[in-house]
Image: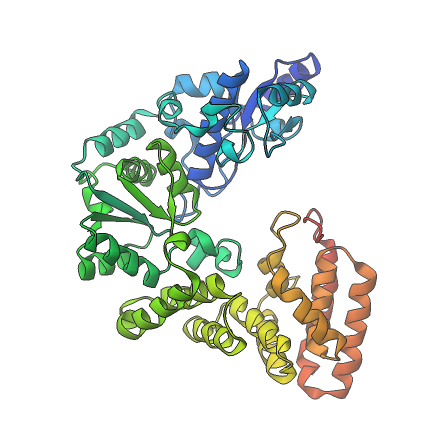
Length: 482
């Protein structure tokens, strides 16, 4: 089914103008799990409030191997689409999220009444916004809502195959995630780190679960890593339980999601895929960071990489070091933090995230020269890229919602270095300021950099980045840095 025509979209707008009935809307453009989570919440909210639900299904990420976003007519039944799907673009305005954090039915009805078009379904548990004591329905699982989604026959066949696959009663499903968080642009951003269980922590959790007598199934996107973990621990690669042929990658994703939902225990990160599987099984995800304490993760990572590191791809080694640092960063000494981030950088030297964090850690300890070296290396990567703006600024931080500035933790360190006379820190801060639309202060920092660069030949090559810093001011529509 193709997207609605221009006439359909105009008709939708006209109906809104004629007091179109209010609905609960699921409107997401990210991964499969998050989209389906919102659909389940839309169904539940619509039942609670006695209104219809609708959903959108844009083709964002459809061409990415790390996501399983099929065109709507290849994923849902014709009847379900006809009854509930609406155009993504024309449903961008007029909907509000439940206010939370302790709404009840009366406040939800009031919000629905005051919203121009209806309520927007969140993609995570309704219990985070609605009082479970006042509305007990928000605390139960979502298997009944899932049963109301009409899927394409090919997807339905995959779901039925997953329900029929033999599965021991005492089974643990471990969802690793990987994909674009290790190999795509999201590997530059900190906020997605907790979606992925590192190779080192995954091995420890598999071994613990096996020692407790559980059969362990491993789910994820990196076939080579999963094969190695299963070969060396006795776990089962969940992909080997799929039908031998005939599944599209979209159907494979649904097979895995439903099979994971059947596991007695689900261990994962904050990935929407694992969360959705838990919803279908009327259970919760056991989050890995609650099972392995931060400093314990550091010790596990050191021991595992010393023994098994050569069997992992370099990016998995790097992420294991990074994840150990990131989970324990508030408990580590400065030298420990620098060692762990340095090890991640050694394994994945093209990732500016590690250089930027290393620079900040050195600046924090008053090691200006070492901080300048690391920050200079990060910006040197920008010199080699044919981009208008600074990639080491823009890709790291500015696609996040307001209030979730991705590099918030390092900003004070860069600020202090710039104030203390670091030319390269002034240039980087200029990029930060430009990206948040602060033209005057960005220009001042550019001028400061230029004056320092005239006196120190080390920074001369970076003069080519000055126009790129100011070009970030043209990046309209990005969230402001609060």
